[in-house]
Amino acid sequence: MLLKDALISAVDRLAAARVGSPRMNAELLLMFTLGCDRAYLFAHPECELTSEEQTRYQETLKQRAQGIPAQYITGHQEFWGIDFIVSPAVLIPRPETEHVIETVLHLSKLSNHGGRASSPGGSTKIVDVGTGSGCIALALAKELPQAEIHATDISSAALEVAHANAARHQLESRIRFHQTDLLQGLDPGAFDFVVSNPPYVGESEEDQVQLEVRKFEPRNAVFAGPTGLEVIERLIPQARTALRPGGWLVIEISGTIADRVQRLLGGWEQVQITNDLQGIPRVAAAQKC
Image 1: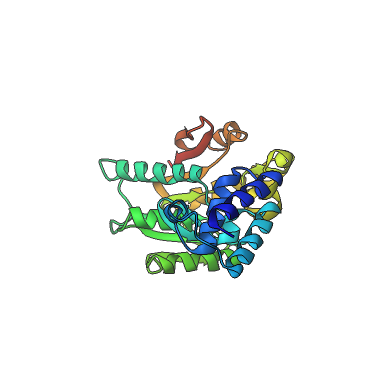
Image 2: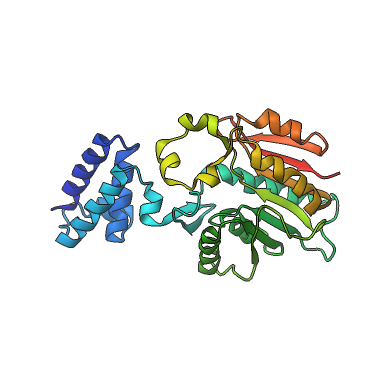
């Protein structure tokens, strides 16, 4: 089968299965199958696929048609310009989480220009809570080369993925991983930033969540409990304990819980909510008194 014909057939198959963006998915899975880039697809439409390539491509299309996210099929997702290994053990990194990185970088810059001092010794200490694939921790390690980065997760399978990503990008010496529930066991008053993309979807909102997210992504990384606030309610007091005076808590949220999160942060200073590019509240930041 010619490459162009395989692509046309794949687009039709995915469209029939009601997969969103069928052409993009068909191209992505063909690039994965052939180990090539998009330019190759456009430059070689008459290239003939081997029977083995056809078989492998059909298998990826079958999985995608069943709703398995393309990132779990290919094992990769880009975040903050970094290629991450992903598996069903971790949440797939999403573009809106980059607003968390932007917020930390902005607040870090302010702290270094006339704000309150960083931790004793001068280096900024950051902990990423519920690190998953490690996307937040690695992005911050890349952008803040002098910072001391810690990352926690309760899941050993998730930490394996995060470790692998740190090793792939030569950042394993920069990040200290801890298997623990939120911030349990970490030193009190030690951190300048507690950063997290916690589970924040309520079980009552389940019907509004994409089927492939509900079906294939780790449930405990998506759903917090009945209201969506259960993890954040535990994280906020633990973050207050872990932060030094003047330290910042920065967490990803949704519009559904933004007002309630603001109320939970009533005893903090400089509480600020940042919207994403769609105008939806996406990041809550607050400073410890």
